Length: 95
Image (cartoon, rainbow, N blue to C red):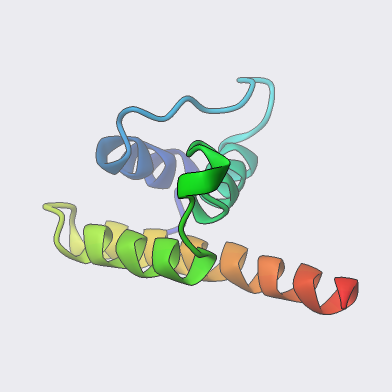
């Protein structure tokens, strides 16, 4: 599925309590930012945050167990993979 608007809607279905960035950004940028925030667990108090790997695992599990269409599930997983790869690259550059 290559429809950024539909992928963003699928994300909103699974993470309905999340607020997204400014509407001035396009759907792809909003989705990437939302996933980055989710993986970094930024909406949780710092003392109770879990690791990025744990958040990734929980997100993939949530997607797989959802009632979304298979194409939507795959598209969301691809987006999570893409953002996770970016975060890992950022970590490499920092060290």
